Length: 52
Image 1 (tube, one colour):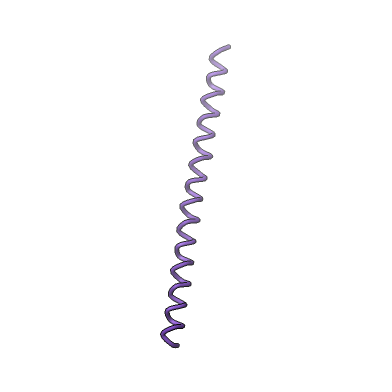
Image 2 (cartoon, helix red, strand yellow; image 1 turned 90 degrees about the vertical axis):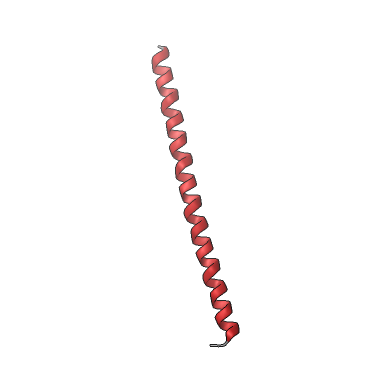
């Protein structure tokens, strides 16, 4: 392969790796947001139970 082709393939690999990493980070962030929302909801439910 030519140097230009090798360089292009390397850029594609780097872009793909970056996209995968960003997706994993976003997924973890989304999971944490859901966990936080559940914790908040549980706290509100507990507060309502205690107010009765």
